[in-house]
Amino acid sequence: MPNIASVRVICIIRDPEIAHIIQEKLQPLNFVVDSAINVEQGLAVYNAAPCNLIILEEQSPGDDGVQRLRQLAAQGSMPPTIMIVGDTKAAIEALKSGADDYVVRDADGMYLDLLPIIVDRLLQKQRLVDAQNQNVQTLDQNTKTLALLKTGAQAISEAVEVNAIVEQVLKAAVQLANAAEASVWLWANEPKTLLRSKAVYRDGHYDSHIIVDLSPEQGVVGQVARATRSFTVACTIAESLQYPEFAVYKTPHLAVLLAVPLLIHDKLIGVLEVTNDNPDRFDATTTIALETLVAPAAIALENARLVDVLDDRAHELNARHEELDAFSHTVSHDLKNSLNVTLASAQYLKRKYGTTFDDVGYKSLEEVELTSLRMRSTIGELLLLATIRKAEIKMEPLNMSAIVAEAINRLDEIIREYCPDIVVPVHWPAALGQGPWIEEVWVNYLTNAIKYGGQVPRVELGATPVDNDKVRFWVRDNGTGITAEEQAQLFAPVTRPDQEGHGLGLAIARRIVEKLGGQTSVESIVGRGSTFSFTLPQANK
Image 1 (cartoon, rainbow, N blue to C red):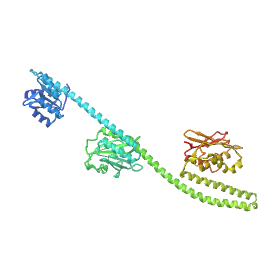
Image 2: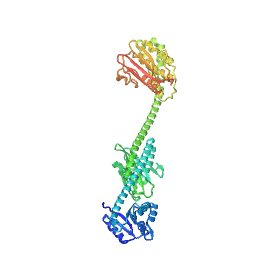
Image 3: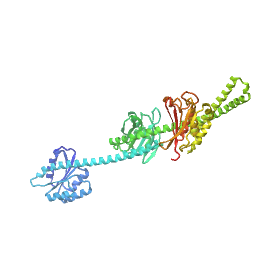
Image 4: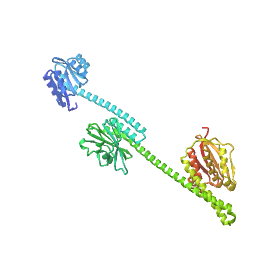
Protein backbone atom coordinates (compact mmCIF):
# COMPACT_ATOMS: atom_id res chain seq x y z
CA MET A 1 0.00 0.00 0.00
CA PRO A 2 1.26 3.51 -0.75
CA ASN A 3 2.81 5.58 1.98
CA ILE A 4 0.52 8.55 2.59
CA ALA A 5 1.72 11.40 4.79
CA SER A 6 -0.19 14.27 6.38
CA VAL A 7 -3.50 12.39 6.48
CA ARG A 8 -5.54 13.02 9.64
CA VAL A 9 -8.09 10.45 10.77
CA ILE A 10 -10.68 10.78 13.54
CA CYS A 11 -11.64 7.45 15.01
CA ILE A 12 -14.94 7.55 16.96
CA ILE A 13 -14.95 4.22 18.84
CA ARG A 14 -16.51 3.58 22.26
CA ASP A 15 -13.95 0.90 23.16
CA PRO A 16 -10.52 2.55 23.85
CA GLU A 17 -8.77 -0.77 23.27
CA ILE A 18 -10.26 -1.13 19.80
CA ALA A 19 -9.42 2.50 19.06
CA HIS A 20 -5.84 1.84 20.10
CA ILE A 21 -5.61 -1.20 17.83
CA ILE A 22 -6.94 0.84 14.89
CA GLN A 23 -4.39 3.54 15.63
CA GLU A 24 -1.58 0.96 15.56
CA LYS A 25 -2.90 -0.51 12.32
CA LEU A 26 -2.88 2.91 10.62
CA GLN A 27 0.44 4.19 11.98
CA PRO A 28 2.55 2.34 9.33
CA LEU A 29 0.76 4.53 6.78
CA ASN A 30 1.98 7.66 8.61
CA PHE A 31 -1.59 8.66 9.45
CA VAL A 32 -2.27 11.00 12.34
CA VAL A 33 -5.10 9.35 14.30
CA ASP A 34 -7.22 11.18 16.87
CA SER A 35 -9.64 9.13 18.96
CA ALA A 36 -13.03 10.00 20.47
CA ILE A 37 -15.32 7.79 22.51
CA ASN A 38 -18.57 9.23 21.14
CA VAL A 39 -19.93 11.34 18.29
CA GLU A 40 -20.15 14.53 20.34
CA GLN A 41 -16.50 14.30 21.28
CA GLY A 42 -15.59 13.34 17.72
CA LEU A 43 -17.41 16.38 16.32
CA ALA A 44 -15.58 18.62 18.78
CA VAL A 45 -12.25 17.19 17.58
CA TYR A 46 -13.33 17.63 13.95
CA ASN A 47 -14.43 21.21 14.46
CA ALA A 48 -11.12 22.03 16.17
CA ALA A 49 -9.10 20.72 13.20
CA PRO A 50 -10.85 19.24 10.15
CA CYS A 51 -9.69 15.77 9.15
CA ASN A 52 -9.32 13.75 5.96
CA LEU A 53 -11.27 10.70 7.12
CA ILE A 54 -13.70 9.60 9.85
CA ILE A 55 -14.01 6.05 11.15
CA LEU A 56 -17.33 5.75 13.00
CA GLU A 57 -19.04 2.89 14.81
CA GLU A 58 -22.59 2.08 13.94
CA GLN A 59 -23.65 2.88 17.49
CA SER A 60 -21.92 4.96 20.13
CA PRO A 61 -22.90 5.21 23.78
CA GLY A 62 -26.01 7.33 24.10
CA ASP A 63 -26.06 8.17 20.39
CA ASP A 64 -27.09 6.65 17.10
CA GLY A 65 -24.09 6.76 14.73
CA VAL A 66 -26.22 6.38 11.61
CA GLN A 67 -28.49 9.22 12.68
CA ARG A 68 -25.52 11.53 13.36
CA LEU A 69 -24.03 10.49 10.03
CA ARG A 70 -27.20 11.70 8.35
CA GLN A 71 -26.91 15.00 10.19
CA LEU A 72 -23.30 15.43 9.06
CA ALA A 73 -24.21 14.57 5.47
CA ALA A 74 -27.00 17.14 5.55
CA GLN A 75 -24.48 19.85 6.44
CA GLY A 76 -22.57 19.09 3.22
CA SER A 77 -19.15 19.34 4.86
CA MET A 78 -18.48 15.77 5.91
CA PRO A 79 -15.14 14.15 4.95
CA PRO A 80 -15.02 10.54 3.65
CA THR A 81 -16.46 8.23 6.30
CA ILE A 82 -16.11 4.52 7.03
CA MET A 83 -18.79 2.90 9.20
CA ILE A 84 -18.02 -0.14 11.39
CA VAL A 85 -21.28 -2.12 11.34
CA GLY A 86 -22.56 -5.39 12.79
CA ASP A 87 -24.17 -6.82 9.66
CA THR A 88 -24.94 -6.22 6.01
CA LYS A 89 -28.32 -4.67 6.75
CA ALA A 90 -26.65 -2.05 8.93
CA ALA A 91 -24.07 -1.49 6.18
CA ILE A 92 -26.84 -0.69 3.70
CA GLU A 93 -28.36 1.81 6.14
CA ALA A 94 -24.95 3.39 6.67
CA LEU A 95 -24.40 3.81 2.94
CA LYS A 96 -27.88 5.29 2.56
CA SER A 97 -27.10 7.73 5.35
CA GLY A 98 -23.96 9.05 3.62
CA ALA A 99 -21.13 6.69 4.55
CA ASP A 100 -18.57 6.19 1.78
CA ASP A 101 -17.59 2.66 2.78
CA TYR A 102 -18.06 0.13 5.60
CA VAL A 103 -16.47 -2.82 7.35
CA VAL A 104 -18.49 -5.57 9.06
CA ARG A 105 -17.41 -6.31 12.61
CA ASP A 106 -16.62 -9.97 13.28
CA ALA A 107 -16.05 -11.86 16.56
CA ASP A 108 -12.39 -12.71 15.97
CA GLY A 109 -11.36 -9.12 15.02
CA MET A 110 -10.34 -9.83 11.41
CA TYR A 111 -12.14 -6.65 10.37
CA LEU A 112 -9.37 -4.66 12.08
CA ASP A 113 -6.82 -6.13 9.63
CA LEU A 114 -9.12 -5.29 6.75
CA LEU A 115 -9.69 -1.72 7.91
CA PRO A 116 -6.33 -0.21 6.69
CA ILE A 117 -6.99 -1.63 3.24
CA ILE A 118 -10.45 -0.06 3.15
CA VAL A 119 -9.02 3.23 4.44
CA ASP A 120 -6.32 3.29 1.77
CA ARG A 121 -8.81 2.37 -0.96
CA LEU A 122 -11.23 5.08 0.15
CA LEU A 123 -8.52 7.73 0.29
CA GLN A 124 -7.30 6.80 -3.18
CA LYS A 125 -10.85 7.10 -4.41
CA GLN A 126 -11.16 10.46 -2.71
CA ARG A 127 -7.95 11.67 -4.33
CA LEU A 128 -9.34 10.69 -7.71
CA VAL A 129 -12.55 12.56 -6.95
CA ASP A 130 -10.60 15.61 -5.77
CA ALA A 131 -8.45 15.49 -8.91
CA GLN A 132 -11.54 15.21 -11.08
CA ASN A 133 -13.17 18.13 -9.28
CA GLN A 134 -9.98 20.14 -9.70
CA ASN A 135 -9.92 19.32 -13.39
CA VAL A 136 -13.54 20.38 -13.72
CA GLN A 137 -12.78 23.64 -11.91
CA THR A 138 -9.73 24.21 -14.10
CA LEU A 139 -11.78 23.48 -17.21
CA ASP A 140 -14.49 25.87 -16.06
CA GLN A 141 -11.90 28.55 -15.32
CA ASN A 142 -10.20 28.00 -18.68
CA THR A 143 -13.57 28.21 -20.43
CA LYS A 144 -14.32 31.49 -18.65
CA THR A 145 -10.83 32.78 -19.49
CA LEU A 146 -11.23 31.88 -23.17
CA ALA A 147 -14.63 33.55 -23.24
CA LEU A 148 -13.18 36.71 -21.68
CA LEU A 149 -10.25 36.65 -24.11
CA LYS A 150 -12.61 36.26 -27.04
CA THR A 151 -14.84 39.09 -25.84
CA GLY A 152 -11.83 41.29 -25.10
CA ALA A 153 -10.18 40.61 -28.46
CA GLN A 154 -13.43 41.39 -30.30
CA ALA A 155 -13.88 44.65 -28.39
CA ILE A 156 -10.25 45.60 -29.08
CA SER A 157 -10.60 44.83 -32.80
CA GLU A 158 -13.72 46.97 -33.05
CA ALA A 159 -12.04 49.96 -31.39
CA VAL A 160 -10.26 52.40 -33.71
CA GLU A 161 -8.78 55.19 -31.61
CA VAL A 162 -5.97 54.66 -29.11
CA ASN A 163 -8.07 55.65 -26.06
CA ALA A 164 -10.86 53.28 -27.05
CA ILE A 165 -8.40 50.41 -27.51
CA VAL A 166 -6.72 51.10 -24.17
CA GLU A 167 -10.07 51.17 -22.38
CA GLN A 168 -11.06 47.77 -23.79
CA VAL A 169 -7.65 46.31 -22.85
CA LEU A 170 -7.96 47.54 -19.26
CA LYS A 171 -11.53 46.26 -18.86
CA ALA A 172 -10.55 42.81 -20.11
CA ALA A 173 -7.37 42.76 -17.99
CA VAL A 174 -9.24 43.54 -14.75
CA GLN A 175 -11.71 40.73 -15.47
CA LEU A 176 -9.09 38.19 -16.51
CA ALA A 177 -6.80 38.84 -13.54
CA ASN A 178 -9.56 39.61 -11.04
CA ALA A 179 -7.48 42.71 -10.36
CA ALA A 180 -8.24 45.74 -8.25
CA GLU A 181 -6.80 48.16 -10.81
CA ALA A 182 -5.03 48.11 -14.16
CA SER A 183 -3.01 50.63 -16.15
CA VAL A 184 -1.48 50.94 -19.62
CA TRP A 185 1.83 52.70 -20.24
CA LEU A 186 2.92 53.84 -23.72
CA TRP A 187 6.06 55.49 -25.01
CA ALA A 188 5.80 59.24 -24.47
CA ASN A 189 8.59 60.38 -26.74
CA GLU A 190 11.20 59.55 -29.31
CA PRO A 191 13.73 58.02 -28.97
CA LYS A 192 11.64 56.11 -26.42
CA THR A 193 13.16 57.20 -23.14
CA LEU A 194 9.93 57.71 -21.15
CA LEU A 195 6.87 55.55 -20.56
CA ARG A 196 3.71 57.53 -19.73
CA SER A 197 0.56 56.29 -18.03
CA LYS A 198 -2.10 56.37 -20.73
CA ALA A 199 -5.01 55.41 -18.47
CA VAL A 200 -6.05 53.58 -15.29
CA TYR A 201 -9.12 51.39 -14.83
CA ARG A 202 -10.68 50.81 -11.40
CA ASP A 203 -14.18 50.10 -10.07
CA GLY A 204 -15.58 50.14 -13.62
CA HIS A 205 -14.22 53.63 -14.36
CA TYR A 206 -11.72 54.64 -17.03
CA ASP A 207 -9.40 57.49 -16.00
CA SER A 208 -6.98 59.03 -18.50
CA HIS A 209 -6.18 62.16 -16.49
CA ILE A 210 -3.51 60.74 -14.18
CA ILE A 211 -0.20 61.38 -15.93
CA VAL A 212 2.99 59.81 -14.59
CA ASP A 213 6.23 59.38 -16.55
CA LEU A 214 8.65 56.53 -15.89
CA SER A 215 12.07 55.82 -17.32
CA PRO A 216 13.00 52.21 -18.19
CA GLU A 217 14.99 52.17 -14.93
CA GLN A 218 11.96 52.79 -12.73
CA GLY A 219 9.42 50.42 -11.21
CA VAL A 220 8.06 47.14 -12.48
CA VAL A 221 6.91 48.89 -15.65
CA GLY A 222 10.47 49.97 -16.38
CA GLN A 223 11.76 46.48 -15.56
CA VAL A 224 9.37 44.98 -18.11
CA ALA A 225 10.33 47.61 -20.69
CA ARG A 226 14.00 46.74 -20.30
CA ALA A 227 13.63 42.97 -20.33
CA THR A 228 10.56 42.80 -22.66
CA ARG A 229 9.09 40.01 -20.54
CA SER A 230 6.51 39.75 -17.77
CA PHE A 231 7.25 40.29 -14.09
CA THR A 232 5.26 39.78 -10.89
CA VAL A 233 6.46 41.64 -7.80
CA ALA A 234 5.13 41.46 -4.24
CA CYS A 235 5.29 44.91 -2.68
CA THR A 236 3.86 47.22 -0.06
CA ILE A 237 2.80 50.84 -0.02
CA ALA A 238 5.97 51.54 1.96
CA GLU A 239 7.92 50.66 -1.18
CA SER A 240 6.24 53.35 -3.28
CA LEU A 241 9.56 55.07 -3.92
CA GLN A 242 10.92 51.86 -5.38
CA TYR A 243 7.75 51.41 -7.46
CA PRO A 244 6.72 54.92 -8.59
CA GLU A 245 3.78 53.59 -10.61
CA PHE A 246 1.98 53.47 -7.22
CA ALA A 247 1.16 57.13 -7.91
CA VAL A 248 -1.55 56.17 -10.43
CA TYR A 249 -3.35 53.72 -8.13
CA LYS A 250 -5.83 54.33 -5.31
CA THR A 251 -6.10 50.87 -3.72
CA PRO A 252 -4.95 51.53 -0.10
CA HIS A 253 -3.05 48.29 0.53
CA LEU A 254 -1.48 47.11 -2.70
CA ALA A 255 0.40 43.87 -2.26
CA VAL A 256 1.33 42.71 -5.78
CA LEU A 257 2.09 44.17 -9.20
CA LEU A 258 1.98 42.11 -12.42
CA ALA A 259 3.20 43.76 -15.63
CA VAL A 260 3.31 42.30 -19.16
CA PRO A 261 4.89 43.84 -22.28
CA LEU A 262 2.91 44.88 -25.35
CA LEU A 263 5.10 43.55 -28.15
CA ILE A 264 5.07 43.42 -31.94
CA HIS A 265 7.91 41.24 -33.26
CA ASP A 266 10.02 41.99 -30.17
CA LYS A 267 9.31 45.72 -30.56
CA LEU A 268 7.95 47.18 -27.31
CA ILE A 269 4.78 49.24 -27.78
CA GLY A 270 4.01 49.67 -24.09
CA VAL A 271 3.27 47.86 -20.83
CA LEU A 272 0.06 46.58 -19.20
CA GLU A 273 0.11 46.41 -15.39
CA VAL A 274 -2.49 44.97 -12.99
CA THR A 275 -2.55 45.28 -9.19
CA ASN A 276 -4.20 43.70 -6.19
CA ASP A 277 -4.20 43.81 -2.39
CA ASN A 278 -3.91 40.00 -2.20
CA PRO A 279 -0.31 38.85 -2.78
CA ASP A 280 -1.49 35.39 -3.90
CA ARG A 281 -3.96 36.67 -6.46
CA PHE A 282 -1.78 36.41 -9.59
CA ASP A 283 -0.29 33.11 -10.76
CA ALA A 284 1.29 31.74 -13.95
CA THR A 285 -2.17 31.24 -15.48
CA THR A 286 -2.95 34.92 -14.95
CA THR A 287 0.28 35.92 -16.67
CA ILE A 288 -0.42 33.68 -19.66
CA ALA A 289 -3.96 35.05 -19.98
CA LEU A 290 -2.75 38.66 -19.94
CA GLU A 291 0.04 37.92 -22.41
CA THR A 292 -2.56 36.39 -24.71
CA LEU A 293 -4.77 39.47 -24.34
CA VAL A 294 -2.05 42.00 -25.14
CA ALA A 295 -0.88 40.25 -28.34
CA PRO A 296 -3.73 41.61 -30.51
CA ALA A 297 -3.88 44.75 -28.37
CA ALA A 298 -0.30 45.68 -29.28
CA ILE A 299 -1.10 45.34 -32.99
CA ALA A 300 -4.29 47.40 -32.61
CA LEU A 301 -2.45 50.15 -30.71
CA GLU A 302 0.35 50.30 -33.27
CA ASN A 303 -2.16 50.45 -36.13
CA ALA A 304 -4.05 53.24 -34.36
CA ARG A 305 -0.80 55.11 -33.82
CA LEU A 306 0.09 54.79 -37.50
CA VAL A 307 -3.38 56.01 -38.46
CA ASP A 308 -2.89 59.03 -36.20
CA VAL A 309 0.48 59.71 -37.83
CA LEU A 310 -1.06 59.43 -41.30
CA ASP A 311 -3.91 61.73 -40.28
CA ASP A 312 -1.45 64.28 -38.95
CA ARG A 313 0.57 64.13 -42.13
CA ALA A 314 -2.58 64.36 -44.24
CA HIS A 315 -3.65 67.48 -42.33
CA GLU A 316 -0.16 68.88 -42.77
CA LEU A 317 -0.21 68.15 -46.49
CA ASN A 318 -3.66 69.69 -46.85
CA ALA A 319 -2.44 72.80 -45.07
CA ARG A 320 0.55 72.99 -47.38
CA HIS A 321 -1.68 72.48 -50.41
CA GLU A 322 -3.89 75.29 -49.24
CA GLU A 323 -0.85 77.53 -48.89
CA LEU A 324 0.45 76.52 -52.31
CA ASP A 325 -2.97 77.06 -53.88
CA ALA A 326 -3.20 80.52 -52.35
CA PHE A 327 0.34 81.31 -53.46
CA SER A 328 -0.22 80.02 -57.00
CA HIS A 329 -3.43 82.04 -57.34
CA THR A 330 -1.73 85.21 -56.15
CA VAL A 331 1.35 84.73 -58.32
CA SER A 332 -0.67 83.60 -61.34
CA HIS A 333 -2.96 86.61 -61.19
CA ASP A 334 0.00 88.97 -60.81
CA LEU A 335 1.82 87.35 -63.72
CA LYS A 336 -1.32 87.33 -65.81
CA ASN A 337 -1.85 91.06 -65.28
CA SER A 338 1.75 91.79 -66.25
CA LEU A 339 1.52 89.55 -69.31
CA ASN A 340 -1.68 91.22 -70.42
CA VAL A 341 0.16 94.55 -70.39
CA THR A 342 3.07 93.05 -72.37
CA LEU A 343 0.73 91.34 -74.83
CA ALA A 344 -1.38 94.44 -75.34
CA SER A 345 1.74 96.55 -75.91
CA ALA A 346 3.15 94.07 -78.43
CA GLN A 347 -0.16 93.89 -80.31
CA TYR A 348 -0.46 97.70 -80.29
CA LEU A 349 3.10 98.16 -81.64
CA LYS A 350 2.49 95.51 -84.28
CA ARG A 351 -0.77 97.13 -85.38
CA LYS A 352 0.34 100.79 -85.15
CA TYR A 353 3.99 100.70 -86.12
CA GLY A 354 4.43 97.29 -87.72
CA THR A 355 5.38 98.75 -91.11
CA THR A 356 8.24 100.75 -89.60
CA PHE A 357 10.07 97.62 -88.33
CA ASP A 358 12.50 95.70 -90.49
CA ASP A 359 12.06 91.92 -90.85
CA VAL A 360 14.13 91.10 -87.76
CA GLY A 361 12.29 93.63 -85.59
CA TYR A 362 8.87 92.53 -86.83
CA LYS A 363 9.73 88.88 -86.23
CA SER A 364 10.87 89.70 -82.69
CA LEU A 365 7.62 91.54 -82.06
CA GLU A 366 5.64 88.49 -83.23
CA GLU A 367 7.77 86.29 -80.95
CA VAL A 368 6.91 88.53 -77.97
CA GLU A 369 3.23 88.26 -78.83
CA LEU A 370 3.35 84.46 -79.30
CA THR A 371 5.37 83.91 -76.12
CA SER A 372 2.97 86.10 -74.14
CA LEU A 373 0.01 84.08 -75.41
CA ARG A 374 1.72 80.82 -74.45
CA MET A 375 2.58 82.12 -71.00
CA ARG A 376 -0.96 83.33 -70.47
CA SER A 377 -2.24 79.90 -71.46
CA THR A 378 0.20 78.25 -69.04
CA ILE A 379 -0.89 80.52 -66.21
CA GLY A 380 -4.52 79.71 -66.98
CA GLU A 381 -3.69 76.01 -66.79
CA LEU A 382 -1.92 76.49 -63.46
CA LEU A 383 -4.97 78.24 -62.08
CA LEU A 384 -7.23 75.47 -63.37
CA LEU A 385 -4.95 72.79 -61.89
CA ALA A 386 -5.14 74.44 -58.47
CA THR A 387 -8.89 75.01 -58.71
CA ILE A 388 -9.73 71.39 -59.58
CA ARG A 389 -8.26 69.97 -56.35
CA LYS A 390 -10.52 71.86 -53.98
CA ALA A 391 -13.55 72.47 -56.19
CA GLU A 392 -16.92 70.98 -55.21
CA ILE A 393 -18.26 68.86 -58.05
CA LYS A 394 -21.78 68.14 -59.17
CA MET A 395 -22.08 65.21 -61.57
CA GLU A 396 -24.45 65.91 -64.47
CA PRO A 397 -25.34 64.11 -67.72
CA LEU A 398 -23.01 65.29 -70.49
CA ASN A 399 -23.90 66.39 -74.03
CA MET A 400 -20.68 64.91 -75.40
CA SER A 401 -21.39 65.91 -79.00
CA ALA A 402 -21.62 69.59 -78.05
CA ILE A 403 -18.59 69.36 -75.72
CA VAL A 404 -16.38 67.79 -78.43
CA ALA A 405 -17.57 70.32 -81.03
CA GLU A 406 -16.65 73.23 -78.73
CA ALA A 407 -13.24 71.68 -78.01
CA ILE A 408 -12.53 71.41 -81.74
CA ASN A 409 -13.62 75.04 -82.26
CA ARG A 410 -11.11 76.15 -79.61
CA LEU A 411 -8.34 74.45 -81.62
CA ASP A 412 -9.06 76.37 -84.81
CA GLU A 413 -5.55 77.86 -85.00
CA ILE A 414 -3.68 74.57 -84.56
CA ILE A 415 -6.09 72.81 -86.93
CA ARG A 416 -5.33 75.41 -89.64
CA GLU A 417 -1.61 74.90 -89.00
CA TYR A 418 -1.51 71.05 -89.10
CA CYS A 419 -4.59 70.31 -91.28
CA PRO A 420 -5.51 67.05 -89.47
CA ASP A 421 -8.19 64.56 -90.54
CA ILE A 422 -10.49 64.40 -87.49
CA VAL A 423 -13.05 61.58 -87.26
CA VAL A 424 -15.86 62.08 -84.74
CA PRO A 425 -18.67 59.56 -84.06
CA VAL A 426 -22.27 60.57 -84.63
CA HIS A 427 -23.53 59.17 -81.34
CA TRP A 428 -21.92 59.09 -77.91
CA PRO A 429 -22.74 56.89 -74.85
CA ALA A 430 -24.34 58.81 -71.99
CA ALA A 431 -21.92 59.69 -69.20
CA LEU A 432 -21.75 61.83 -66.05
CA GLY A 433 -19.31 64.64 -65.35
CA GLN A 434 -18.85 68.41 -65.58
CA GLY A 435 -19.05 69.82 -69.09
CA PRO A 436 -16.38 72.59 -68.91
CA TRP A 437 -13.88 70.25 -67.28
CA ILE A 438 -14.42 67.45 -69.83
CA GLU A 439 -14.00 70.04 -72.59
CA GLU A 440 -10.52 70.77 -71.18
CA VAL A 441 -9.70 67.05 -71.29
CA TRP A 442 -10.70 66.83 -74.97
CA VAL A 443 -8.73 69.99 -75.78
CA ASN A 444 -5.57 68.54 -74.23
CA TYR A 445 -5.98 65.11 -75.81
CA LEU A 446 -6.74 66.56 -79.24
CA THR A 447 -3.84 69.04 -79.04
CA ASN A 448 -1.37 66.24 -78.41
CA ALA A 449 -2.88 64.00 -81.09
CA ILE A 450 -2.66 66.77 -83.71
CA LYS A 451 0.80 68.07 -82.78
CA TYR A 452 2.40 64.65 -82.38
CA GLY A 453 0.48 62.81 -85.12
CA GLY A 454 1.77 61.77 -88.53
CA GLN A 455 2.88 63.98 -91.39
CA VAL A 456 -0.80 64.30 -92.19
CA PRO A 457 -2.34 63.84 -88.73
CA ARG A 458 -5.30 61.50 -88.55
CA VAL A 459 -7.20 61.83 -85.29
CA GLU A 460 -10.06 59.45 -84.43
CA LEU A 461 -12.39 59.94 -81.47
CA GLY A 462 -14.61 57.27 -79.94
CA ALA A 463 -16.19 55.74 -76.85
CA THR A 464 -16.65 52.21 -75.54
CA PRO A 465 -18.70 51.00 -72.53
CA VAL A 466 -16.55 49.05 -70.06
CA ASP A 467 -17.07 47.08 -66.84
CA ASN A 468 -17.95 48.66 -63.51
CA ASP A 469 -20.57 50.96 -65.07
CA LYS A 470 -18.03 53.13 -66.87
CA VAL A 471 -17.60 54.59 -70.34
CA ARG A 472 -14.13 54.78 -71.91
CA PHE A 473 -13.62 57.80 -74.19
CA TRP A 474 -10.54 57.80 -76.40
CA VAL A 475 -8.47 59.69 -78.98
CA ARG A 476 -6.33 57.68 -81.43
CA ASP A 477 -3.55 59.23 -83.55
CA ASN A 478 -1.20 58.01 -86.28
CA GLY A 479 1.99 59.40 -84.76
CA THR A 480 5.35 57.73 -84.11
CA GLY A 481 4.19 56.17 -80.86
CA ILE A 482 5.58 56.38 -77.34
CA THR A 483 7.94 54.03 -75.51
CA ALA A 484 6.94 52.36 -72.25
CA GLU A 485 9.39 54.55 -70.31
CA GLU A 486 7.90 57.69 -71.82
CA GLN A 487 4.34 56.51 -71.14
CA ALA A 488 5.10 56.28 -67.42
CA GLN A 489 5.90 60.02 -67.35
CA LEU A 490 3.15 61.34 -69.60
CA PHE A 491 0.60 62.44 -67.03
CA ALA A 492 3.15 64.02 -64.68
CA PRO A 493 3.45 67.83 -64.82
CA VAL A 494 6.26 69.47 -66.81
CA THR A 495 7.05 66.33 -68.82
CA ARG A 496 6.73 65.56 -72.52
CA PRO A 497 8.21 62.70 -74.55
CA ASP A 498 10.39 65.16 -76.45
CA GLN A 499 10.65 67.61 -73.52
CA GLU A 500 8.89 70.36 -75.45
CA GLY A 501 6.31 72.68 -73.94
CA HIS A 502 5.13 73.13 -70.38
CA GLY A 503 3.56 69.68 -70.01
CA LEU A 504 0.58 70.70 -67.84
CA GLY A 505 -2.15 69.61 -70.25
CA LEU A 506 -2.12 65.89 -69.53
CA ALA A 507 -1.60 66.50 -65.80
CA ILE A 508 -4.73 68.67 -65.83
CA ALA A 509 -6.61 65.98 -67.75
CA ARG A 510 -5.64 63.33 -65.20
CA ARG A 511 -6.63 65.49 -62.22
CA ILE A 512 -10.01 66.35 -63.81
CA VAL A 513 -10.85 62.73 -64.62
CA GLU A 514 -9.80 61.41 -61.21
CA LYS A 515 -11.83 64.15 -59.52
CA LEU A 516 -14.85 62.89 -61.49
CA GLY A 517 -14.26 59.29 -60.42
CA GLY A 518 -12.50 58.03 -63.55
CA GLN A 519 -9.02 57.15 -64.77
CA THR A 520 -6.70 58.27 -67.56
CA SER A 521 -4.49 55.92 -69.57
CA VAL A 522 -2.44 55.59 -72.74
CA GLU A 523 -1.75 52.70 -75.09
CA SER A 524 0.99 53.05 -77.65
CA ILE A 525 3.21 51.02 -79.98
CA VAL A 526 6.31 52.69 -81.36
CA GLY A 527 5.76 53.37 -85.06
CA ARG A 528 2.01 52.68 -84.92
CA GLY A 529 0.52 55.62 -83.05
CA SER A 530 -1.07 56.12 -79.64
CA THR A 531 -4.49 55.98 -78.01
CA PHE A 532 -5.19 58.29 -75.05
CA SER A 533 -8.32 57.50 -73.05
CA PHE A 534 -10.30 58.45 -69.95
CA THR A 535 -13.27 56.88 -68.17
CA LEU A 536 -16.40 58.41 -66.70
CA PRO A 537 -19.45 56.94 -64.90
CA GLN A 538 -22.35 55.92 -67.13
CA ALA A 539 -25.30 58.29 -66.91
CA ASN A 540 -27.99 55.62 -66.83
CA LYS A 541 -26.61 53.74 -63.81
